[in-house]
Image (cartoon, rainbow, N blue to C red; front, side):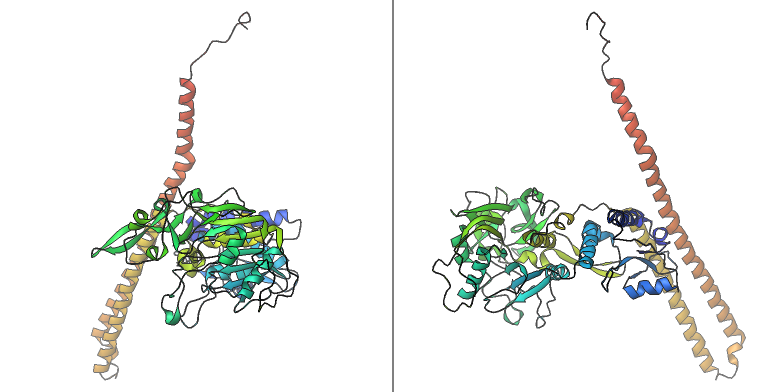
Length: 554
């Protein structure tokens, strides 16, 4: 661990976060029975330790008030040539701290990554033609697994595949459907993300896709799953607020087709979902059991106020989304957005291998160990639905505002049988920024920057005047006449005054911050315990006094 000694002095709001990071690292080392060794290094400027930190890829952090670059990151190596780094322990990643560390240990401890096969029909892999980058959900999956993105007709899956994932499947051939069916019949883990209208799907020439619906009707019907690709869920209880132009005016309205689902909609009793706090889905469909023999377990469910609306109307970016609830139909039960199928499933191809299939394994008619996860929204895996880019400590970091990526990775791990990591994601964030202190720092820094710029402008102006004066005098020694000397003295006075002002701004910043921190400490350490003690004493004194029973009464 590379942590500069001046980190918490330059950024006091990071003190608690830094203590938690170091404490957790030490816990890993203590529990590893000698297999993990922790070394904490303070990389001094121009030292070999600083060179090693830079060589590992640890980021320098430029903090206000720090005279030297600061380091706060981790470099990990194994007994061979494996090497992993966390360039900076950003507070915004505290919710994933245990996951990041456990993933790092797992990657260094396993020589071969598990293999995941992905049928990508929505564009997770990115598109260099339209400039769309690889999406974070797929990038995160690649960090943990050996991912094979399959295209065209699929007649087999790579050797060693543990999970097959079909994302927004459109127009799959009989051969591909048969391969998926037989994979499931053979006990393989399968995840399907279908969508009645994939809003993030890009069509030809970067235009919206002419047909944005996806389905696995052949498989769903055989497996006892009801799914209508023409219907989308509209739920006012979980509606996201959007801006729509209605009657010539921009209006903030709740869009019931765009859902921000809280733990009330998520089956938090399952270990893979227990830590999730929010999922964002857009124009999602729904599932219902249709008399099959498989166990149908809802994982994510809309509220009782949800209706089923026309998917085309739900995806209309120019319509009034408030009409969706009025025009929709009420289902018999709350719509299920994500479900898990287990137990007994029957093949969708009772006649055996279809024509054109090159599947080489023997045909399997049924399985009693089904392991299938189905989601009625594919957009949830795209960055737009859960990621925003932010600059933290000088580094651009994708920051999650929803747990869509955690849900995807947790489910893949659970389906693959590796649930050890799944319970470590999406934990509540312990670090809370001191917003008033940060605001004071930003204000003082803005003042500092403005003063600094004014100083630079005065220097540039004075230098230009000196240059013009020297040129007009012919450069024959007139540079040292009384007028130029006077201007030089004025410039020096301006420099000294501006620097003094800068120092005063920095001093005022530190004084205000330390004063506020002192008051926060006094309140937390002194006043709050005193108030709690007084409250307890008040309740104790107000309790009715009952006389002790005598021996005869006893």
